[in-house]
Length: 128
Image (cartoon, rainbow, N blue to C red; front, side, top):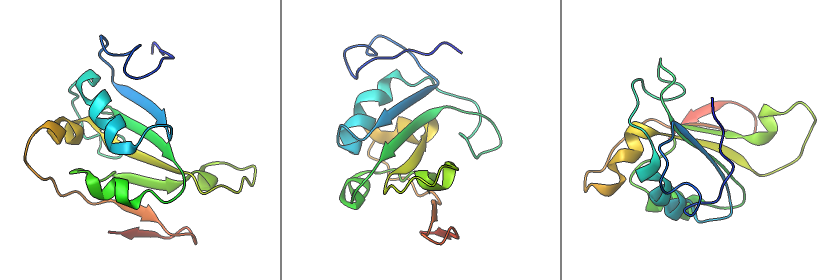
């Protein structure tokens, strides 16, 4: 693993990456379209798909449903950050995962349907 700390697009434009981690500074659709060309095509289906394929992990808070509606590709993982930490942090931030294979379609006209697992505030998964 070779991490690179940088800003999109300036520091990563010439790179090729398995994973990109972002936080809610840019609008989600803009960020995904900007980093999509830097993602390496991967074998496997992403974090939950049987292989450790690559993708984008994005941490986002607030009401971002309109940003998700703009995308052709929903996240395959959507979980509250507070469920991932044991320190009792009270935050509205969510961890979203978009697999590389799905993001490669952002430049095409095809619309892709995927199952998204979203955990409700009570911690029970629900599909949407």
